[in-house]
Length: 346
Image (cartoon, rainbow, N blue to C red; front, side, top):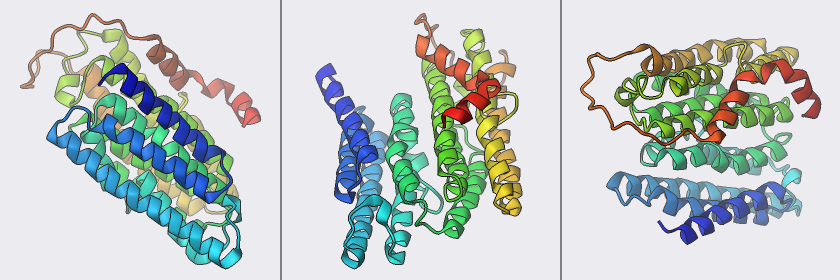
């Protein structure tokens, strides 16, 4: 793909995201979502591999259906209340349809089936965009409409997402699929708290984006698409692999790393809101995620050649690890001590 085309798609993604997160009117928000969808499709299918074409087709169909539901929800609300303002969503049917639409956009259970398949058919960089930037507009819409949505539905979806995200990631061998199920599990944590503390859900999303970007860029640097490749990388880039181990543990939510902060605050807030049972369940379900992060970390750092893998060693990559990986991994590991400052800003 030539640089001009990449620039146009990058600008379109920026425009679509900015349009959705800054609009008050449903039609403008819907337009931003559509621009985003159309801009990411060529990036998913650029390799012309049948799996990439399949991923692009699945992504298009799901996102088109979700966008149609967003439009239908807003039109129903406007029909009954005369309001096109995003924050004035009050009709019960519209609220239910919008919950379904945003769950489809984000990949929340039970509308999660498309996400691992699309991520598996994309490159690691496009996978990073799908897991972070493309989730930002729907999360913003969820944030704006959270007072109108039913907490019971969101909580059910959240617990199911945390359970299935952890459970289905256990036996995966492809790093992109593992990160897809990790994303579904993290979305569960955001969905469970958004009705009670929307700002906390956004903080969780920002920190998740930070840590996921660090993991995706690290895996992209060592070209690790599956666990068997990851097993042979310790001898090539030991320092990057050691950092990857810590970043994965941060993504799992272990103290004293950054990933512990949102989980700690969410459990605290849920307990304050007297839904301690939900807090206990989702905390226990995060152990499933911890298992497959530890499995990734084990493959990256503790398995040393010679070992029983049939994977051929790749040629040594002399490209230096870029500054972005260094900055993101540092932030993914060391933000917990300054959490009072983060909370004061948020």
